[in-house]
Image 1 (cartoon, rainbow, N blue to C red):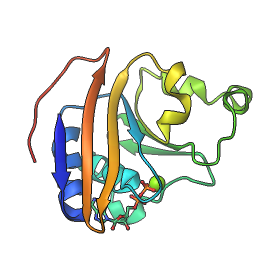
Image 2 (cartoon, rainbow, N blue to C red):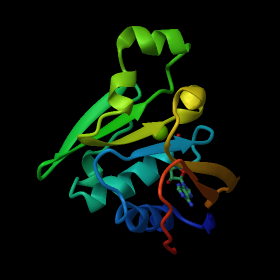
Image 3 (cartoon, rainbow, N blue to C red):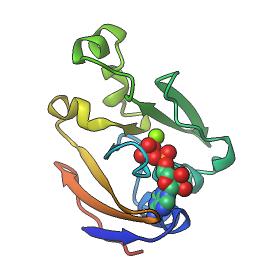
Image 4 (cartoon, rainbow, N blue to C red):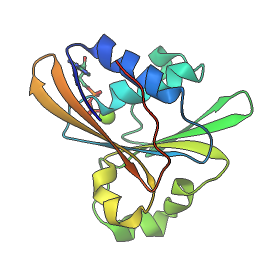
Length: 148
Ligand SMILES: Nc1ncnc2c1ncn2[C@@H]1O[C@H](COP(=O)(O)OP(=O)(O)O)[C@@H](O)[C@H]1O
Ligand SMILES: [Mg+2]
């Protein structure tokens, strides 16, 4: 599935609609360069789960941020500062990837692509100042359809 968005607001709306199909145990792999909109997309998802987007900051320095929505947990992970897979294994973060009790969102998931066997890949690319290309791919995950 391919989308083009022409504003931050539109990307958030797309993410919000996408999030309607998500549940605990799902893994969302956010990929693309710095400034592509991965955090914006994560905010749209979190909004659907009742998290105030103003409170969402990419956990670049903390690596992981945990939210709770009703009885559901959401882990927002940012691997920007991750240098090696060994580093990740040493920190034990891979356990978070496979949590069946949480919805997991990972920014810079391309860095650990080979470790992850299933999930929904959201590949974002910068096209122009306010324009982004967003490609959704299902990786051993049941497919669903939605529109902008
Ligand atoms: N169509 C768009 N979709 C998402 N973000 C956009 C769009 N157009 C402009 N932007 C801007 O691009 C930036 C994306 O930042 P961010 O989500 O933090 O990127 P990343 O997490 O991928 O590094 C924000 O400043 C946002 O306002
Ligand atoms: Mg980010």
